[in-house]
Amino acid sequence: MSRAKKDRLKEGNLFIPLIFSFGAILEDLPLKEFLSDPTKLSNSLRRIQNYFQVDGVVCYGDTMFIAESLGSKITDNKPPLVKQLDKLTDNFVAALSELPKTEYITTATEVTKRLRILLPDTILLCLLPGPLTLASQLTGKETSELLNQGNFINLVSKATLSMTKALGDAGIDLIIFQEKTMPLLNENTIKVLHRSYAPVLNTANFYQISTLLMVEQFQPRNMGYISKIVNGVVLSPRYIPEATENFNKVSIALPIPLLQESRENIEQYLTEHNIMSLVKSSRLFLLITDREIPNNVDREQIINGIQTIRDLLKSKTI
Image 1 (spheres, rainbow, N blue to C red):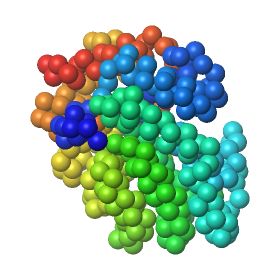
Image 2: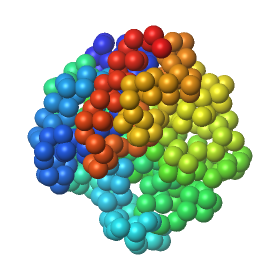
Image 3: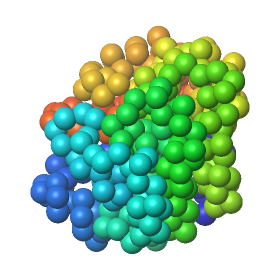
Image 4: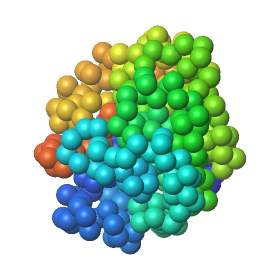
């Protein structure tokens, strides 16, 4: 990792909108072609980064790619229709050994390696499903039920661990582990989560990868428990008061529609939700979008919104 990247990660106040498949629109490429070709993907992401000049680039943003690589059958229905892999642990362990060789994984790691060379001072980010979400993707079960299956969660976390190591070898700088939902935690379930996350986070630390946990359907009463597992979280702006009590630096997820607003409305939102207060006090680590920017949004509005937020964060004058 370059000195410039180390300094930026230490300093915080980062802005990395989740631009990935939207890059196919910006580059006028078919989505399948964009996602499956490491050369086109890395070159497109480099051009996108050079255009926006934000603090980082998303090397791979599809959080279903591990489940698909392990045999999950993705359909239009949710949860995906899959085999109950908790009853096929031998098959699952065998599949784990082949995980780094699968198409999606090799594409993600190859893109990371290339961007490390093409963008040496740009922070490289990847989104990975957390163990709970990955277990749900593989089995179709609710996370509340899965938390009572500690051994299975530990087994599934080996896939997250394998991917973390592969990305570490490739040169990733920042990983956000995404959990779709997390039920109310207690002293027993937090132990299950801790056992599943500890090897993953230890591996990330070995590679000097910064890590964050992002829970889409967050429950504030879990904040204290989560702070025992991870050093940083990505939250909605409404949880800033609780987050600043539990973490030194806070990461915030902005709603996609905000990027389509006028500069005046964006300024007002960042001020009223105390985001600029975090920036000025150096308590903000990362500002991202709450999900990947979809393909069906207005291209020009999104471009203007990203540039507006980037400039406002740099100015710190609101």
